[in-house]
Amino acid sequence: MRKDIPLPTLERLCKVHRLLEDLEKSGMTRVSSTDLSARLGVGPPSIRKDIGYLGEIGNFRAGYDIRTLRHHLENGLGLNKKKKACIVGLGRLGSAILHYERLGLNGFDIVAGFDSSINRLETIATVIELHPAHEITEVVRRKGIALAVIAVPSVAAQEAADRLIEGGIRGIVNFSAAVLRPVKNIFVRDIDLVREFRILSVLSEPYWKKQQP
Amino acid sequence: MRKDIPLPTLERLCKVHRLLEDLEKSGMTRVSSTDLSARLGVGPPSIRKDIGYLGEIGNFRAGYDIRTLRHHLENGLGLNKKKKACIVGLGRLGSAILHYERLGLNGFDIVAGFDSSINRLETIATVIELHPAHEITEVVRRKGIALAVIAVPSVAAQEAADRLIEGGIRGIVNFSAAVLRPVKNIFVRDIDLVREFRILSVLSEPYWKKQQP
DNA sequence: ATTTGTGAACCAATTCACAGCG
DNA sequence: CGCTGTGAATTGGTTCACAAAT
Image (spheres, each protein chain N blue to C red):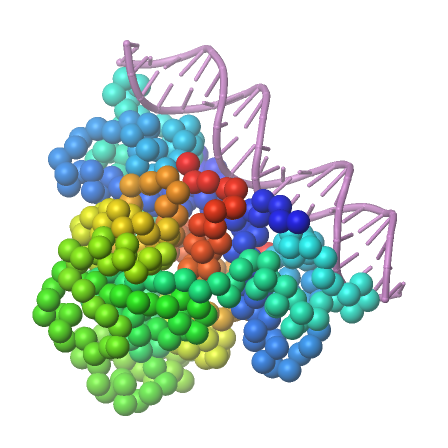
């Protein structure tokens, strides 16, 4: 049943899922591919294809039942599997992420935080276990942590990544500006605010051809 | 000269630029497409095509001169154009972004912060002008702010976006989990940590076919 | 009458292969 | 000879158009 889902499809499906949560909360009970596509800014056939990767589910006359479709996505993508996560770097950004409750609510248990400043570790008020940075490898391995956020200055990012990988990490969200050395089977999602601003800046230049739908 | 640069190319070129800054700092002076491609985890011809969108620049025997290539990217993409930016939502995440110096260093002047809590506006120590959220439209218009970060809870995100757009914003980095209604000619980059974790989680499942290079 | 699901057709992006230059 | 730049081939994704379902 499971084909090889393209990455863009996976990203859209996650957005669809998030959208369904809101629609459900607003009291809606059914939704069509056209409606979903308008809210996401993509073509209707694209949505249907995306959903189709996980098997049939829609009602031919009345679109999708929101609750059913949401569960379908959760099962198909394994969205309610629990995973352990950690945060490396507890400056302003790292602390903000450490306190971000929505991660835990969605099955991502933050079980450790790391920083190279002992002072900082002693100052932060949290129930989460905090460790000095040199323990990254050991703690990640011992606790079986699958996912990590890197929120250290970019000069320190590669070393943080190396230690995480040595400990057996599976995926990294890299908030530093550093371009990390690619490693086979370690998946990285880069989030660099300056890069995002630059992309927006280029896209919004008047002579830029590509228009959003 | 400027063709229609694909979005993936634009994203890679920004990473290449960032990489060049580091290589330059480390004392290197020349770099080949093969070397760049290895550090980015993409194929060498891809890098050459990407750079090719901005015109010829390489030395046929010895690859690219790092400094020249960096300037080439900066000119070609307009990376040193200055833009005004603002932050909507000054909780932990918004405050962290407000204090993130690298934005200013790269030409993005944060000229305003907004929050619906007056108390919060009075507590934050910064030289940046802070305003209550109901002034978003007016301030964005008056100051000619081009870019915005949304860092409010997801229930408040759509209204924040509406006010920004009404004020004439050009691009938005949306850190909330909300899926914003698409608007023509307003460009949005969505950053949702839960979504990123979910994507990593799916990608790192053993039966997942797609492997990174 | 609508709206899904899907093969076919189309388009975009990556990769290949080699010509051209130093 | 090594490395860039680029048309050609290929792969991957999106869009189209229509059959199937209720």
